[in-house]
Structure formats: C-alpha cells, structure tokens
Image (cartoon, rainbow, N blue to C red):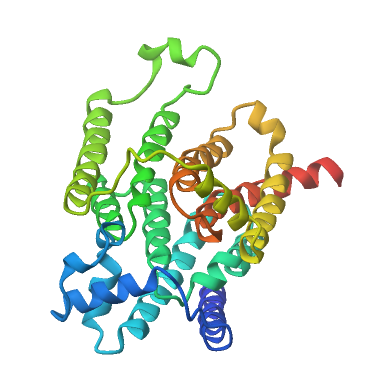
Length: 331
C-alpha cells in the first residue's frame, strides 16, 4: 500500500513539474477567455464592475472567486487555482479508474495516459476554468461509483456548475447509471418485469428528483443572472470557423489520441458491448451524454481541443477494461 501511495505522489509531482515547465517554455500569452476571468478576479477584489464582463463568462464564478483570495497577480492566482484543480482531477481519476482496472499496472497505465494527453498537459497551468469543471465531473462520477451520500453528490454537482455549466450534464448521466444499476435491467425482458426488480422505487425517485432539481435550480439562477441567447441560429460562418478550428495542431493531436484510445477500447470490448455489459455501457453512455454539449458548442460557439478532454474520462477506462479481453483473444 505504501508503495502504491508513493507512486501516486511521484505521478502528481511529475504532473506539477510538466505543467509548470509548459507554462514557462510554452506560455499562452493571448488566451482569449483569460481576460474575462482576470476581470472577475478584480470584481471579487472590489476593483471592477461585474456589468463590464460579458454574460457568457460572468456565470463561471468559482475559479475567479478562489483566485481573488490569493494575494498575487490575478493571472498567477488563476494559474495556481487551475493547477490545483488539475492535480485533484488526476488524483480522483485514478480512484475512478480503479473501478475498471483489474491490476495495479493497468491503473498506472490509465493514469499515465490521462496525464500525457494534450488537454491535461496544456490546461494544467492556464488561467481558465476547464480543469475545475473536469475536477467536479470526475469527483461526481467517483462519488456515485462508491455510493456516497446523495446530498454530498448534489453539493458537488451544484458547486461544479459554478465553475462550468457543462458539469450539469453529469446529472442525466447519473440518472441513466442509476437505472442501469437496477437488477436485471440489461437482461432479456428485464424492462417487462418491474415486480422482480429488488429496488426501493420511493427512495430512487426521491434521490433522482433531488439530484435533478437542485443542480438545475442552480443552473437556472445562474442563467437568469447571466443570460445567454440560446435561441441563436447557427450560421455557416461559425460552422466553417469550427471546422477550421478542428484542423489546428492541438485539436488534431487531442482527437488523434482520443481515437486511438477509444478504438482500442471499443474493439477489445466489442463482444461485451453486444452482450450489454453494464460497466462497458456506462462508459459508452458517458461519451454519448457529453457529446450533447460538444455538438452545441460546434454550432453556436468556438470549439477547441479543450472540449474533447471530458471524453478521455470514459475512453481510458474503456481501454483499460479491454486489456485482459484482448489478451484472451490473441495470447
């Protein structure tokens, strides 16, 4: 156990050094979003009016709020908050990964893969909110997997929405997972035999209602305070811009890494996908659910490699889960 903990500490330390060196030698000097988060830091320090900040960024208050407490330059404070959330994401992703790995070597392989993908390396030390959003998504997934208290999960998701609105999409995913965890739900004729399901429907309904209503209320309050134009019509110009954005070096690298990991995972688990293996399908539903905000971003906003980061949370366990199966097929 001590040996395992030492390895994790070393991994986190390496992640810190890599992120710090990346900031020094490959600084993102002109990150478009950063100026708005810097302005939010000034708002919380009483130095600027929040009405001067566009509403699209005004609702992401958590990271700037924490950064405002750190008595440093706003950009430096935002960088350190981002790095802290990135390291915490790595730590909890490792705990989430252990649910799918069968050996310690597989756990470490999955962890190393997650550290060396482009988004983790690049976003680990930048004045943005992506790493905070990822942390709350991974934490919520881990909390569900270990069946932590429902109110703890609700608080986690609600606070996470204050970092990035995308965190809300963990709610429909957890609802799907909750129904998948009902006995016999994936067996033949399972949907027709409600009376055979050994589950407290009253408790399940209560928990899922709370899980839906409270985070959704937080999201609505944020959108009322910082409204966005959800009825905008996607334009050909914006779609063409996003097609060009997909061709950038960072985005192509990220998509390439994701495809390699995802293809290995799907190929190794193909038979279990057809057999409706619950663990495998949970990961696939994760990819499906988080494709919704990706599609929305492609139509209405500017897309980049950042928006593909979440898919690795499901693709890497899928690949790790397939290693033993691939070994049985070819060894």
